[in-house]
Image 1: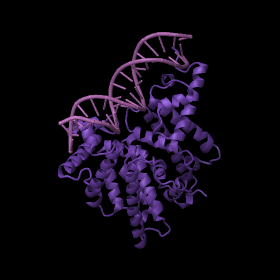
Image 2: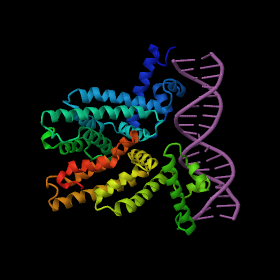
Image 3: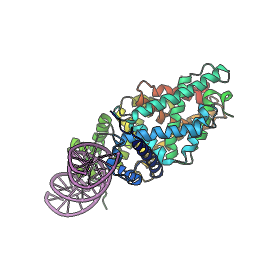
Image 4: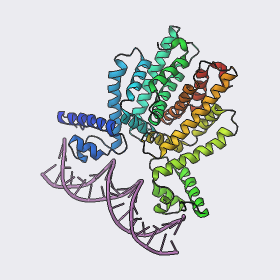
Length: 197
Length: 197
DNA sequence: GTCTATACTCTGATAGAC
DNA sequence: GTCTATCAGAGTATAGAC
């Protein structure tokens, strides 16, 4: 009863595929990149690649989880005081990886399908980010920096929506300052007393 | 030098295709709907359909423009005092057409490609909506309902981003109140004095 | 200009040998 | 675990009838 990827070699291969696929999509973008190309770049056949992922969509879900983990370590956890600073840091970094932004947005749209494999990732992702933002709001309310009348869950939904929507506008016009707009909106939403300084 | 669709019959056909395609995608969603199916439903061959649209993506662009025009007439212009009310009304209506929301989000992601035919639509769309929102902010600043320190362009970018991002969260969880969240965010962003009542 | 028939290419996916 | 071979379906392109 050994699951796929349980053996050392399989695990390494799977990780290698994930790493290469992430790089290829970051470089080439979502469209115009086939699994055959990813497979070739890994040095494996298409069925060889598909041995590790049920479908193309499952691969995408895995890529997004992988990238989320990397972002969290590199930008959110390290060097950020709270979830808002972390979110802003990730958004700032996003402008360096347009291919991944495109992949993320495309999958966010696809997650609307109840059957789509990426749905699970997005539900988890949105839930986690919303919770951490709501916690920041509650924390600042406890210390009096933010008015008690503010609804933490509402602000959390709004900040997540803003992060996603700003990425769309940035792909249309790279001069849009995603991180800056997010930060300014946060200040307006929770009141200037709660602004990041 | 007669363009495609210059004749009365062609114009009618093109409109019929647009109408049927919009209905099919609203019903079936973006995925799992092929051009062959749309063509069959129109009662025309696939090349017959493609005679009116350069490519699948051009058809999508036309669908989005058509839908935008309908929404504007039906919800924004009629029964709404200003651009914010109109935007909220369209968002409220969106929960009745999940297939079109999915199509819109998918194309919004695809518009990141500089070569993609829908890019033009989204640039126009975002520009127009942002301008009308910024005008509302400036109008309220002139009448003193909104503080002069608020940046109209920033608020406009934020409101558009919010509208897009809330649709993503709504597809993940239909209990999300897109219109309500948008309205509350607007009140916070421009200050309670400027809230819709 | 409008439209059909046919065929081409590429995609993700599967079957089965080794 | 990985390959070769093959598949059905997608969007697209061309030829030509009316």
